[in-house]
Image 1 (cartoon, helix red, strand yellow):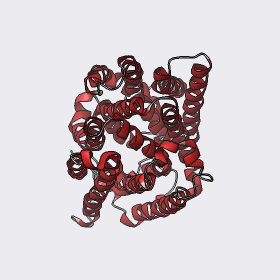
Image 2 (cartoon, helix red, strand yellow; image 1 turned 135 degrees about the vertical axis):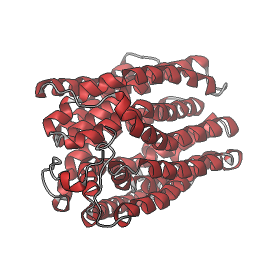
Image 3 (cartoon, helix red, strand yellow; image 1 turned 120 degrees about the vertical axis):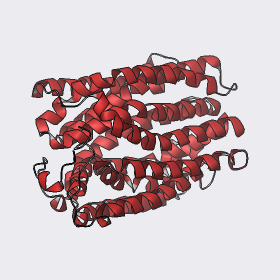
Length: 439
């Protein structure tokens, strides 16, 4: 049965969304910043320590686990997060162990699928390098969904500073593992994903310990109840990473692993923009979902407008930095490969902005059971990326940021339209969310 918005007033919330101050997003920024800095570090290490062809293999495998790890995350864990919006703060984090157990069969499937990616690595990459990258990436693909879910539950439970703390733990563990590996002469190809896997494991252990401290809680849902909504989230959530993976495969085989390696360097250089977007979204997302459920358009729009102003301003400043002369450009000094093709980094930054700008809109669609139209939007964006991948023999390394930019613009158009429908269809009627149905 559907539950009207008038009965959702008990949804846990510390304050009205309209009163939410940007300063309160600090723990979210630390969370996303520290967590993403861990992947930034391994990306820089891969680019600086390995030859371009090996970096191409790294980029291909990276896009593979980003895509494949969505299976447990979207099918089970994100629907569980949405249902927990109605639970108390304590229950939200206590549910972590229950949700982790529900996802175990899917995590096993993730492991099996990841191993098959080895068949797609170009022959120009040495076999030992490919296998070292792949074996450590399998561990990352299994652990990433759990650590991401754990951090989201901490934010959902209003434990924003704890979420930031476990992300800092991830960063420190990854950095320390990387440093020890370099000092002890561990094979280079084992370092990037191997260090990240240890960082992810540290987060999973920490969140598990926190959940034990708050007590036991068995949420009133099962995999069977989550899958009906989760399958649409999986479909919509898999389009973008699947398209990214297809683009990587196309560039690796049609333009060469070296071209993909250059594009990966530019992607890493542009990553801070998405980090900033994810940081603000992590804290604003619970309030954004709650306001959408209540049908309060003005409050939800106020959140999004402030989000876009900060993200747009940051993107402008960061973009200007990328135009500095190489001798004074910190990014060029850190990632010279990224600037070997003029304009590639700037296009990557622009693509990152348009894909990060719609994150809160997506949260509103998810909370109000618009997962099917969201899937359509993601599918349209992914289709445009795949079509552009066919130009890889001509665009070469430009194929990656160009397809990401076009895909982001297409998603924006569709998501913005479907988001307007939340507040214009049956205006004044009750709104409910997908976790209220499915009984």
